[in-house]
Structures are given as structure tokens and as C-alpha cells.
Image 1 (cartoon, each protein chain N blue to C red):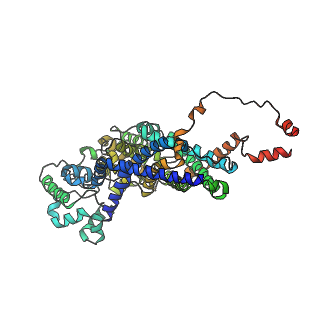
Image 2 (image 1 turned 90 degrees about the vertical axis):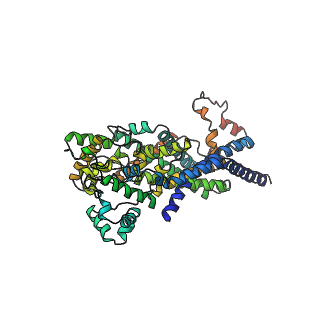
Length: 236
Length: 301
């Protein structure tokens, strides 16, 4: 009885939920862009408070971007990841680097949340959906770090278990058996990721789509001040 | 006023997105429904499977029919040794039968060195009936197709052990493309940060499963729910299985369990994180860290 219930729950959360959230994410994202393009922003509160913000935003973004890229590589080229990990030292380098990125994400996220709670100006501009995203991100970071600590080596077994599961979803032949036998802690991480994708179009996460990437390779710009600020202040 | 308007607008937009999502979900209800059925139905798939294929995938890793004892007993003539009703009850729920205090089930568990036969996914009364019929039919044959790996009893060599070590770590790829054992398992003597921790430490597996033939048969089609989907399309060759048996036998002979490496792993992570934070601080030491504060301090000069 309980086994049947858990099997059904696995089927719904790992087999059906991904399609629902991906449809919601795709349609919601397009719809929001077409009707309210100017809300595509991170709604930065950097101008309201900048000291604490640095220790939140910078570690968080370096960490989360590294981890997201790692997950995408594991999904896209699993055979190459396994080939890389065939030499234990290389496997250890990847795993420790990912763990460091996870810790940086946690440090950044905790700073972000504490800042939003303690700085009155930042708190005012924080909406309910922001708190929901922070909560989910915290849960994802904790379950991710826990998975790395207690269920390593994720970079290898992701390539042989999670990657085929994700490809089975992409090819519309869902096979949840790859992940149903994983520990509940790991499954919580997978389900949390689907929920985050579902929240994507309704939150400030959409800023991921409008990052000014050309800043990375555009020509540098020199700013020259043709006046001496101190002289001007004295003149006033 | 403007803020309230914006909030209203945002709530309206969110509601519209949800409605559109649900509407499209309904349009795709056919396909999503089908997907739902596919995912929900995987537990019932086994009933439709051919009994021989089911046996090969789920039972052959621990049992032979006429090939001698491996982890579990040889099932040749099992239908004559036990009543059909008992077999049906036990195969449907082995842990439950043992827990009920059944004397035969308890004796079987003792003979299997304490290894408890798990509940097999997809086993229904119909499947159990088909399996018992299969055992009866295969027992009547001179050599059953489930008599076990012919090569599983040949003497193990140093070359087997070296091959096993390379296969375990992934230095040599498995022929059918399966992932290396080290992804999920560790073993004593692996060194540095050791192997994976998703699956159990395999140091004592050779002894626990009952020796060479049992372990080789187990590896030929691993029955664990985590390994089954991963290896179903990438089975080990007999030589690979024997290589791993030789490596695990050697690892087990050293005794004890694998060295714990989690603490070192966490420490390395902490050192790396602190270094990164210091690096951030150094890189952006001239960063514009506030708006008003520098203006105020600058104005006072």
C-alpha cells in the first residue's frame, strides 16, 4: 500500500511535474516578455545598501554560475565527464571545486537573506515571491552540499543516473527508474530544481535571460573627468 | 497609488500566466496524461514481461537453476522442496515472511550469510506463478539457461586483479559503456579521497555474498534498484566481472572497511572557500562599496 503510494508519488514528482513546470516556464516567460518586457530585471537593490550586498551577490553568483554550468555539462556530455573522471585526481579536483562553489553559494545566499531581513530599505523592496525563491534556493544549496558530502561522487553518478533521466524527459520517453531508487535527500534536490523552474517566469529570476553578456567582450571604455571635484566643491 | 496599481498588474499577470499554463497543460492533456501513465505504469510493466527475461534481470544475480549455490540457493527442484503456496508467499514478500518468524525463511537467510532477499519491483501474484512455472520447466532440463556463468569458477590471476582495479577506478572503460564502480562505491586501499559514497563500501562484499561465483553472477546483472536501470543496457562482460571479483577479493583480504575521507573532503572545501572569499576581497579592494558614505567623508575633507 505504502510502496504503491510512494511509487505513484515518484511518478508524479519526477515524471509529470517536470513537464508541467517546463510548459509553465516557457509560456510564462514568453508571455511576460511580450506583455511586460521592462519587468525583465533583477530589480537590484545595490543602490540601497552596498556593503553587505557585496558579500551576498558576489560569492552567490560565482558559486551558482559554476554549479549551473557543471550540471549542464553533466547533462549535455555525460560520456566526456566520465572519461575526465577516469583519473581519480581529476575527479577529486572537480568534486572539491564544485563543493567550494556550493559553499560560496551558501555564504552568498545567507548574506543576501540576512541583508534583506535586517536592512529596512532592502526589506521593503522584497516581495513574497522573492522569499519563496530564497527559500527554494537555500533548500537547493543545502541538499546539494549534503549530497556532495554524503553521496559523492555526484559528478560521476550524475552522468550515469541523472543525465539519462533528463534525456528521457527531453525525448518524451520519461524513465524515472534512473532516479527513483536514489536517496530521498537527492530526490528532494531534483524536485526542488523543477519547482525553481516553475517559479522562474513569476520571479526576478528572469534576469538570467537579459544579462548584458556583451559587456564581457565589448571594447573597454575610458571615463575621463575633466574637472577637479575638490575645486568645484570649494567654489560652491 | 502607482505602487498599488503595479501590484494589481503583477498579480493579474501572474494569474494570467498560471491560467495560460494550465490551459496549455489541458491542451497537452493527452500527451501529459500518456506520460503520466507511462511513469505510473512502470511498476506494473513487469507483469507483462516474459518470465525468463524477468528472471534474468531480477533473480539471476543471486540464484542459478542447476548451477549451484551463489548468494541465494540453487533453485533447481525448488518446486519439489517447497509447497507452491509457500513459494508464492515468500517470493511476493521475502522480508515480510522472514519477519513473520517462518522457520524455513529464517533458515534460508542464515544460509545466505544474513543477506535478506529484497522485495522485487514488479512482482505480482501472476508474475510469481510464471516464475514458479519457469523454475519447474528449467529444472527438468539437463542444463538450464540459468545454470550460471561457465567461466565464473576459473582461477583468478594477478592480471584479473589489475584489470579489476582499473575498471573500478575508471582508468579502463567498461566495454559496454557502464559507469566505473568508483562513481558510487569505495573500497579499502583506494587512496586519497577514496571512492563514491552513494552506494555501500564494497570492501567486504566478496565474503558477504559468498565468494567468487556468487559475486561474479551478481555483477553479471546487478539486481539493486539503483544499478539495474544504469546497467540494463550496459552489462559487464564475464572477464570484467571476474576482474572486479579478483580486485574485491584482494581488497577484502586486507580486512576492515574503507578509509573515511569525508572529513578531508569537507576541509578541502572549506579551505577553498575561504581562499576564494579572500581573493574576492583582494580583487575588489578598490570597489565602489557605497554611494552616500564616500560623499559624506569626501565632503568633510
